[in-house]
Length: 128
Image (cartoon, rainbow, N blue to C red; front, side, top):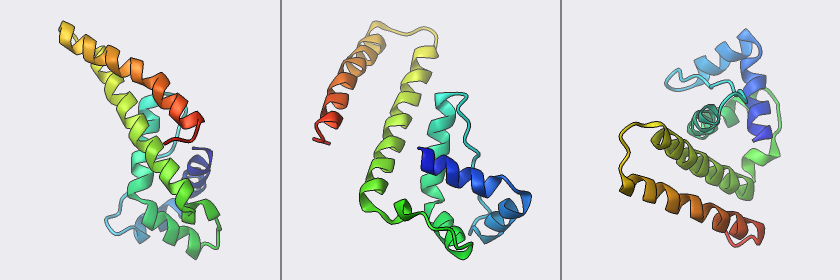
């Protein structure tokens, strides 16, 4: 997450860099600036980063910035996992905030909460 934030902030920090990236991007897509304000922002930021990864690599290569992690398959797999996991947590967060929840909804949410320690354990023993 630190590397993705560093890359995004380096592109978005200066107006010229932002315009160059936007003009280089195929669909004039813009990179979202990462903030630590809410987990929802993290999920959106990471999803956007993955979508723009190809354009980011080209832009950084043209700028002679070298981030070896962007070419490391293990790091990219971990980043993809993080994108999926933060997306699931964001979805769970949104569901918890809704009104008129039924017992079945809450049981589904509770079962998901119970799987989180299992996922953490699998991550710690490098099973995933």
